[in-house]
Amino acid sequence: MTAPFSWIKPEPHGIYIPPADCWVDPSRPVDRALVTHGHADHARGGHGETVATPETLAIMELRYRTGTENDAGEIPHKAVPVQYGETIRLPGGVDATYVPAGHVLGSAQILLEHAGERVVITGDYKRRHDPTCPPFEVTPCDIFVTEATFGLPLFTHPPIEDEMAKLLDRLAAHPDRCVLVGAYALGKAQRVIAELRRAGHKAPIYLHGAMERMCRLYEEFGVDLGELRLVSDHSKDDIRGHIVICPPSALNDRWSRRLPDPITAMASGWMRVRQRNVELPLVISDHADWGELTRTIREVDAAENWITHGREDALLRWCQLHQRRARALALVGYEDEDD
Image 1: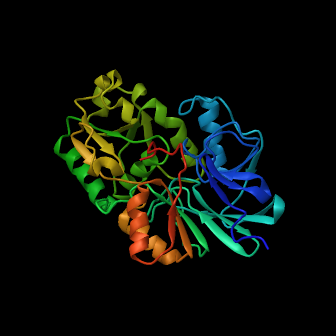
Image 2: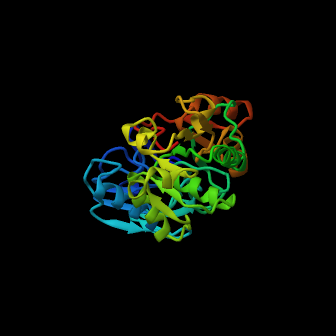
Image 3: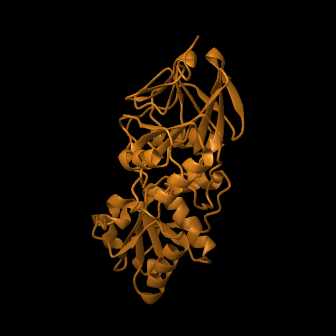
């Protein structure tokens, strides 16, 4: 008799599904990859076949083809799009269903079913409202594979409305300057823009050139970001009293000298513990915080929890104290580049 869950094997460079001969978010090229979302530490180039949501496939094509975010210079050989809620049959009798993860545009949890057993692999996820992507859906399963990026009790993300109010108040107090916000090009930048619009900020928002193509891709998928302008097309006086979005690397770069006395800000969950020499730290995360991680484990109520790419030890200990079976996985290649 086959041992329970012998069909799923965590390996250092990804989670391997032997019956289907495929990998979930592998950190090196494989013949068939199931990809949860488009951040480069989960979505690598060079696979023979890539299975992902249409949004994630479009993000991967943009990033690899343009080389602006990833210099691999490769795009998937075969792209297999899967809509949210759609189930596809993989070789070996394994079914895969893509479920919203609430992390960034196109992000998905992957529900794998085989031999009457259910495993959910979350990739990265958050539980907060995000105008740019569908919300996380709690999916019952036997094994729940959760991230733990902010898996320490000190991480409690504030309401994003409070962070937007801080940003807009600073802008209003300095009409002769601009606020320059560092934000990662996939997910964080578009969320900040969309949340500013939700807060009632209708003025044009200026972009570093490296941000434009991803913002336009979001718009192609129906995300309304309002009027966006390129910094390179406008004068210093045009930009006074406005918000500018740039990659974190450009905050103190020569490029920023063209701006009108910028107030530097950084949007990241890490701003609670890493100030990065910015004037205005904005604690905005696209990952679940400690309370959301533990709440999600309770709500999913799996027989066993696998914890990965983050602060595994504290969440593992929490599971043990609450009589929940858990283990930490030793996956490699996952970084904090998206937060």
